[in-house]
Image 1 (cartoon, rainbow, N blue to C red):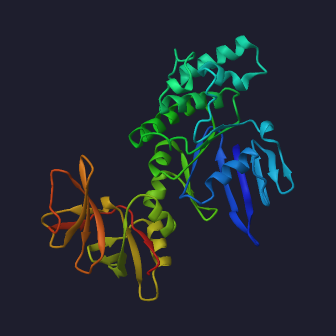
Image 2 (cartoon, helix red, strand yellow; image 1 turned 180 degrees about the horizontal axis):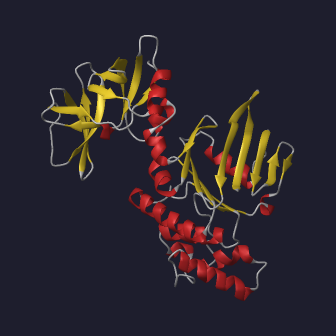
Image 3 (cartoon, one colour; image 1 turned 90 degrees about the vertical axis):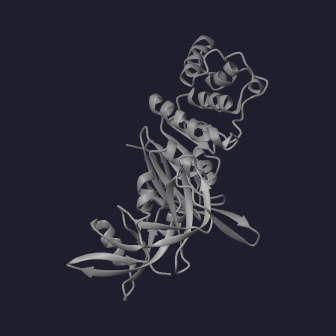
Length: 361
């Protein structure tokens, strides 16, 4: 059963003399107990989606359902407090004058004091903050405040939990680890959740399915693996992960299709890759192939070389940007004991399991 369903949702705002569309016929579904994420740059409409789901923003067209209940359509908006939706805001929005325990029990006013306290203490244990119930928000770290905000949102047992850039105020080194911790917690609690973020590492660490947003639409709703290895558009390919686009020529040899590139030949074995290449190539068989850094392998024995024009140390690996003879650039990941200098030429070869292609420029 869909815990959340958006069907052709459109939201527009007045922008001077005209109305500007923020969400444009947006559609996606989220299954029960699944974790979804809307990933996109600032201005793509992510936060407006959360506001519409929560009931803070009316919609101009389409429908929103939470557990089969219609909660929004044009002219009808179910009040936020009747949607059974929990929200974790960007700044956590904890009450500074209330203790951790009081913050969590704030949404349990219909329960007896004893029942609310018992439930709050159970949630504190679930988020790893047992013994913190009498502390105040200013006495907590950013990560601890985030966990308290999460416990408070989970306390009323919402049908759906919405998270608005929940790690944006934390140190970058903590974000991915906390995202994985949060995923474990939500899975143990069986909570359906929707996150919005601009950080793909957070999205990939936390979500079962990710929707890449652009201009008020979801370009692709898929697993992280498919978004990275099988993007459906150049916009998704550019936004998710790093990569380079190289000119290629599609030819036939011995009854099989392959791509000729400046870095060598790529055989197309997967039927889906072949269908994509056939639809991407022009009348002369020209197209663009997407190469991720792990598709380009450092090989001293290769006769094909690239000049190092940029490098980034990543601990176990270097990320090198290489300029090829044509002037095109590609990225390659190389073990960090291969420490080459700027301007040095290194041998490379192709080793790509998936051949992702797009129409030629």
